[in-house]
Length: 516
Image (cartoon, rainbow, N blue to C red; front, side, top):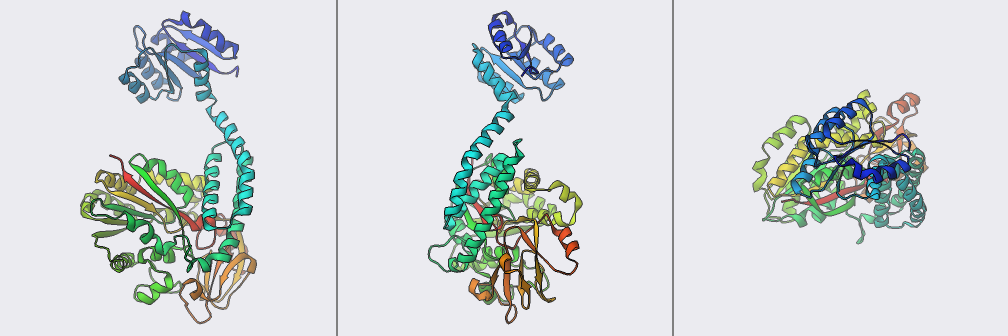
């Protein structure tokens, strides 16, 4: 504590001697002066940790002095102290990025609290967060042993993400390691749960919302003639990524509801997003829309008819609405929609698919610069946040708010950082995805997969006679024995989807109303 240097600026500094003695007794070093000009000189000459600054002084005012100090030391915390409670002074000071604002007369404990808040903030938060997680650790472990429903899994996964986001900025890396172990164990148990229950859930009365019922369950109830709806599907957005985008959205919208739903298997765009827009499972899409459905082994784009699927679903549900659909796959298309977004004000529903996050996750495999920028989940989240704040999508959301439209944000599936390979052997006709495979005549490690021998049991198309699906568990990815080491080195620590994990299957859908 002896290293903490305080500059206290007040034209009545003699009256503050008891406060200064109190701080010096606490081993703080206090330098005092009586005017703004001297304060500016002192800041230029010496490194201070914090400044206490009187607002009402002769000569240079506190606000003028504050501006000069910030020009010289941008990151130096300044606590404004004033007799005045006038709103404009508070606003000026806050606008100048003060660290705290105290009203005279101040007592020593107020000063001490301000010091703790500004100088010991990170340490105190770190210690408190670590202690809180330690207390929560046993409860999570108990919950993990008791979880037996899809609702329980949603709550447990949200709890794990909460602590991951809380712990990521503290100094105790050991706590993050413990949490990571809990997440691994959770994914192990979740895989067993899905393997046991997935097929039954698809036809059960009491079942979670899946991809194919998302529109009917969560979007349709928000449609009305009085207020348009912007429905944004961000491809491949995990729940943790949504959580860090949420504070940005909250500046313009107020959250009404937050749901968690389950992506169908495979957790891949071709299956999950087509199911969202059609309101049908893949085998039903193939049957009802044979001209629009393509299997894994077919050539060409797999998600080219989402607008047609959406129109057919709206007709099937007998909805009398005006809607438009947009798919944004590059910056140019995003800017075009943003620039012309006001033309959507007559729509009851504007559906926007935004592909950037999916492209980002896949780029990690191919581009060294993305491997550096998104080396782990924390960096991946940070990169997602940076993109969102500067994206045409954020501009579109702001314009939707100005038009008074509701906002629904969701995704089609998540993704997982794949760490370990599992061997698979098959002929040249099996699908290429690293988290799931479909085809015939392939072999694999039974313990590592959820195998569906008859795809019709889970409403998936049968590509050929005797074809099956296998889904990788936890953070595994499929690798062929041929050139195994090279393959593993290339794909290890890359983001993939299509398999069974909490990150891929439990995904958000949030409903917002515009702030006035």
